[in-house]
Length: 320
Image 1: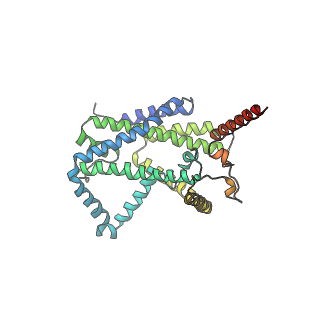
Image 2: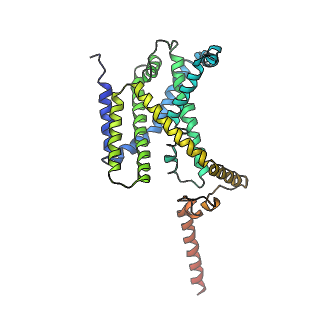
């Protein structure tokens, strides 16, 4: 029939079941396959967007003109519209790249680097990819394909309509697959963020299973709730996260600047920066970065030591 009201609940049940299989059943293959496909899906989405922009290349001057005139026009700047635009941009920007929320460091901290500033620079690059590339290409897909936004759809339906109008019905299926994989990988990623935090805070056995149940229920309820309710709830929670994290950033800013100065100094000396915790005397709570052996790669150094020992043993045997 024409009634598609069943799509949301059914999709929610499927995603909730897949999530439960991973978090309860330990079926890591689903997670690993998803993580492998996500970069490819992101690249595919960028290519779709570039194809749409290339087809409507003649619309780009008009689009750029509308962006600047409608964002920086007299009425927008003087009235409340400008403030609303900035507020919406900040909220959606935080949602896309998590800058300032304190969640992304959970993933960044698992990387093996020789200096924390290296990973910090990589993490900051992710902001440009998420927001500047992916979000901007979405905006251009819509603006070059939908001349009149006044009566257009909202949310994902707007992007789907813009793609279909240019590339045909197959692009709707492709976009649905891309969004599904990106959303599912985001669920798993944020689940592991929460799990690592819980394991750090407490060792009580009942907390982690309760958290897993809450995650699966949140996935299911999120698919049943209205989009406005989900966005409002997410904005509120992210606001609390940002407030707590910004306080932590302010308190830790001194250490961050000391690390940056150390990184810059080593770069100026022509070295590949290596950090060990003795470079921050007086700072407690550092659980790694013990020495160069553990920082720069123990396998390489141990192998060299073994080769050197074998060489010395060989020379000693020859002398005898």
